Image (cartoon, rainbow, N blue to C red):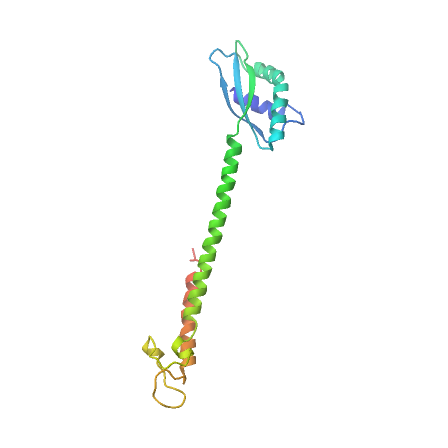
Length: 185
């Protein structure tokens, strides 16, 4: 109850320009005899503005205490002692650090996926290395064996190899492009 009244009064009744707009009461600890209330405030501002806000609230403590007395029925209204609470600021900073690290992780993953896709495209989208180099070595796949241009039956020739290998590379590349699409929902 004390926290709500003090917080609302700071936001709506105090018009001191030294008090930052992003000032909130995070918790209040009232002594057992109700003589003192420790009010913890969080100010999302630079250190100098935080201290200035604290001094302004200490200066307005009498008005805040009078408002508390009007709003509550207590035998004794506690003296308000203000303290800066860094928990919200630290939490905000922690969230910013986490968000920054998550963005870096997403960028690294995107780069890795791009590198893998580029490697897959380049390995599947070209002719067999033996055929490209003009090497007469046997290809890895029987369908890659083609007759040479000179009409001989020696494997590894170029007669018809380029169209077949290009068609095969396009089919593989099309399959990779299809795999990268997001599934429809």
